[in-house]
Length: 143
Image (cartoon, rainbow, N blue to C red):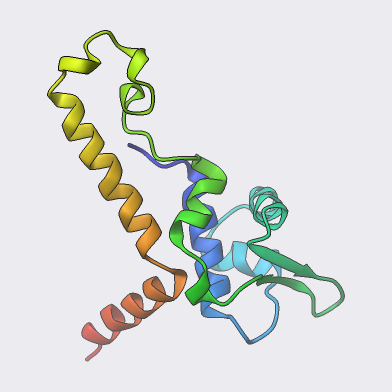
C-alpha cells in the first residue's frame, strides 16, 4: 500500500496546525514554506480538509487556517479517509465476490489482518499522540 502525495502532504499540514493549536491561524503560504509544498497544491488540500470540517478558515490580515477541534480529538483516520477512503489491501477483502478463490484462499486472511492493523493504527492515534511522540524523539536526540 502506497499513500498518495495528497494524503502525505495533508497529514503534514494538519500536524503543523496541531502543533500551532491555540496560537492563532496559520496562513497557507507559511505552512507551504515550512513543509516544502507548493502553495497552489496545498490550497487544494486545505479546501478538501475544510469541506470535511477538519479545519476552519479565518479571514483577514491575520487570517489563515486552524483545526476545527483540539488535536486530541482528531484521529489520523479522519485525515486519511478524506484522501484515501477506507483502507483496502486487496479487492477480495472488501468484496468476497471479487474472486472465485475467496472462500478457499488462505492468503486472504493475511490481507485481512494487514488491513485491520493499518486501520487500528489510524483509528487509535490522534494528532496529539503524534506530536507528543515527536517531542519525545526530538528530546532523545538533543545533546
